[in-house]
Length: 72
Image 1: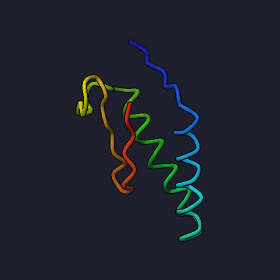
Image 2 (image 1 turned 135 degrees about the vertical axis):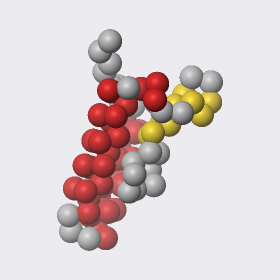
Image 3 (image 1 turned 45 degrees about the horizontal axis):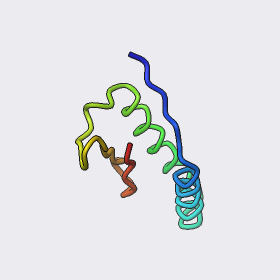
Image 4 (image 1 turned 90 degrees about the vertical axis):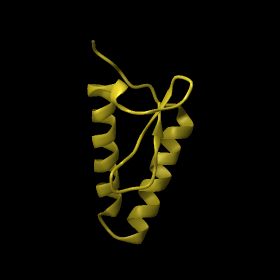
């Protein structure tokens, strides 16, 4: 089965804000953050049911290095 991701505009803004904040902390850290987010999104796409259910049908995936959970 093939899956696709649909992002709410608020989620896009939160990710961009987090990128900007990390980049202000250290040059290149924002890119590392985006790489971690990409890894999480690829993990979700490849096997969404491997992530734990946190509420009804909502699941949560964590970036290993950054403490920004992604709910889907």
